[in-house]
Image (cartoon, rainbow, N blue to C red; front, side, top):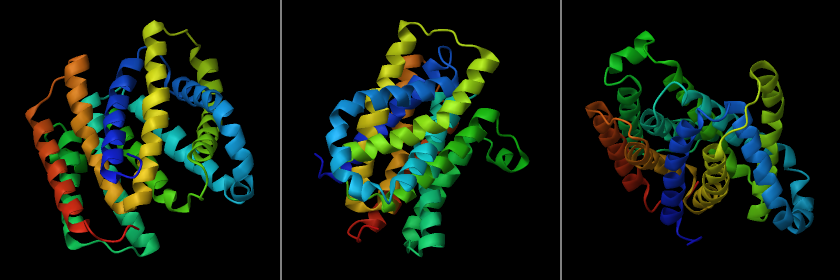
Length: 297
C-alpha cells in the first residue's frame, strides 16, 4: 500500500473530508486555537515513545533542515487547521470541503512561477475548471458575487486556509530523507509551537470550558486519522508522483466531505454544490489524464 500513490492519496483525501465534518461538529465543543494546540500536543506525546530512536539516528540530517520542517508544520499544519476550524463556525462542511480544491491551482501556479516547472495545457484547463467549481460553491451558486465581495467570513477563511496547505505541499520538495516518524514529529512540533501563544490569548480572552465526551472523541479522531494517517499518506504520494499530480487529488476532498456531511450531520446539498463538484471532478480528470506518465516533480 505504501508504494501505491493512488491508494495513498485517495485515503488521505477521504480522511480530510472527515476532518471537515469533525471540525464542524467540534465548533460547539472547542475554541479553534485551543483545539488545534491540544490536537498537536497529544500527537507529539503519542509519537514520542516511537520516534525517539529515529530522531537520534536522523539528527545529522535533521540538524540542517529542522527550521524548514518546523516552518512547514507551523503553516501547513498549525495555521491551516486553525483557519479551517475558525471558518467552519461560519460556513458548512460541504462548502469547506469543496473550497479546499483551490489548493491544486495554487500548487501548480507556484511551481510554475518559482520553480519553472512546466504545466501542460490540459493541466491548466483542468485547474481553471476546478476554480470555477470552487467559485460556484463559495458564492452559493452566484459566481459573480465572488468579484463583488459577497463571500461570507467562513468561505473567505477557507480560501486562506487553502493557501497555507498549498504552501506546505510545495515545501515537501525540501523534505529530507529521514524516517517518516521523525518527519511527522518535527512538523508536529512546529504546529504546536505556533498554536501555543494563540491558545494562551484565546483562553485568557474567552475562558476555557472542558468539552464533553463527544468533544474528546472528535479530538481523538482528528489526532489519529487526519493528523497522522492522512499526512503520512499524502507526503508519500507526493514523493511517488510529484506535487502537481498529487495536489490534484485534493479535489477528491469535496466528494468525501460532502457525502459525510450529508450522511452524518444532515447538511443540505444544493444544486450549486452538485455543479461545483462536477466542475471540480472534471478538472481533476483532465489534469491527471494529461499528466499521467510524466516524470514526477
